[in-house]
Length: 155
Image (tube, rainbow, N blue to C red; front, side, top):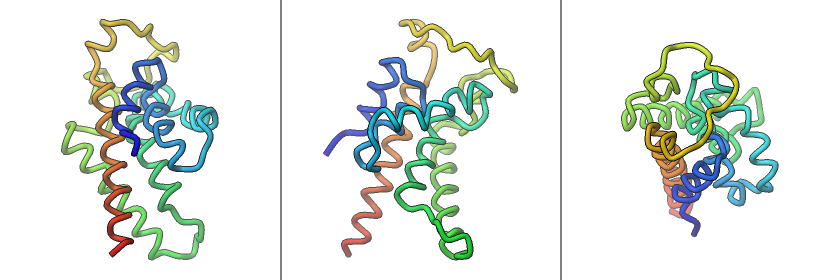
């Protein structure tokens, strides 16, 4: 089995944004080709287009959870509630582990949008930001969720 955490970190260090790194690491698992997974998640880096809101790695976890366990029937409130319970659980565990799930808080930046132009990736960039660790954390969390749900189904 692929180590999604390692794959997500590698993708981030290749220059993909946080959301792309986590989401694309699971492209095979969610039945999506790699390029499509990169495009569909490209808007969520930097806390939603560098708005510094919800961390892109967290958003990618939610998107993966939606593809794996989401609902399609708008009338099934029980299934909706169960899905939102999963999403909240992921968010709160991520926050417990990292102090927040909000990009600007995680990076120690002021609230509000950032310059839309991405920063140049350099050794200093990677050493000054926790993003590699955050994408690895998010990928590990959703991977563990998938494995746990699979084990539950097999019981």
